[in-house]
Length: 272
Image 1 (cartoon, rainbow, N blue to C red):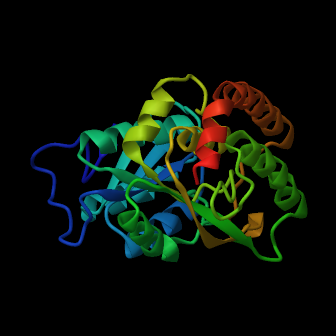
Image 2: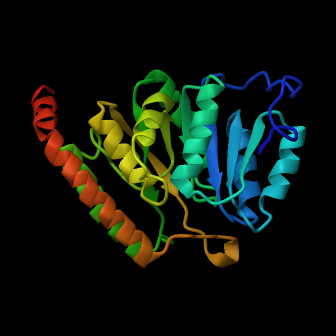
Image 3: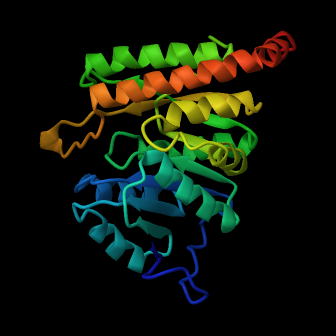
């Protein structure tokens, strides 16, 4: 189901606001994000238009306030999936819908308020100046960030840098897991439709690696990240055991692809 004002998109939908971009949109996948979802959408909307939200089979009712908001704001669109597909699955649904509507780029951000909505304009500007690039957020953590999460992501980052043969945090993949980034739609949709993976927590790192393999240049931009406590409405669906197994399996797959592409990656590296 798609909600602009209400129901599926039709010719009588309200026109988008005059300042809305025709090429770049904000895409927010959401699953049981609680009250933070509305705050996140409102913050994103203050920074950019249009903002699309993909409700990924949520059962907590968090989508209701956003659907109400979209009825009065043509700069917001809500896509509702009846069953949970995982983050990557929700993003793919949004990507295909956006591509079919004529958009070329999406900025993805989490629905839980961790990502800096006030930096959306900065990231979009970098993308507009580098339309063929993948604009990656490089997280700047505050003191509230869980040490285990901060240290653990270094492992995934090292593997992603090995798989792309670039250990330079600025020229390569500075951070493989941070989901605040701008994707060019066409190559990402093509990459995702060629595999049945990249549909859950493995989406962000695998998307970055596979796009770099295709020759999409990464551009890294620092961005603040907040880890919200439960008392602040923070919601996390990360499960250490399950998701670390998923990431390990993902890197095993990518290493096979890395070995097959090694001559090309070496040649590309030497030509810089």
